[in-house]
Length: 188
Image (cartoon, rainbow, N blue to C red):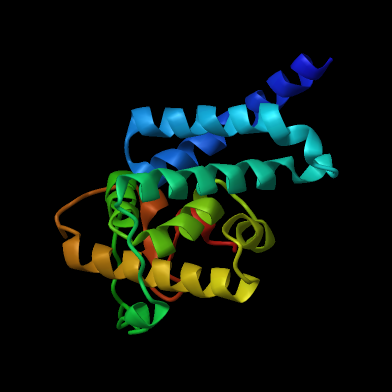
């Protein structure tokens, strides 16, 4: 029975964990290793979790901690103060309209500092709530909201600077200048 429960857990969360790991390390092999390591940790310690409804948060937290450990071992961990990113970017004029494609958006996301990229990926790609992200990262909900806001502003600014006006792309990816969201999240 425990093997069946483990298989179900992997089936439910492998894809989301892999996407999150890939967004962190930007390498398919490292992402697969991190995801496998996370499930190995679950196999060893998962029974300690008292509330099974928190398994998803536990897995994402474990993966993130493994990633940080991986980065520390490689000596590549970069610490950035929030105050360095406090400068607010100019908003897009209301009458301008931009079109985006998924590759441009993901390129912009990957250029973000890890401090801002991680909550953005957890929220929009892995669809975690603010509370789940706060638990995963070990920060207050207000910090999550602030980082998400700054991340969206930075992505928007990057796209403003790098979008070629001649591109004819899907209207699904049109950026709403007043909200800074794409058609995928118009109703949020």
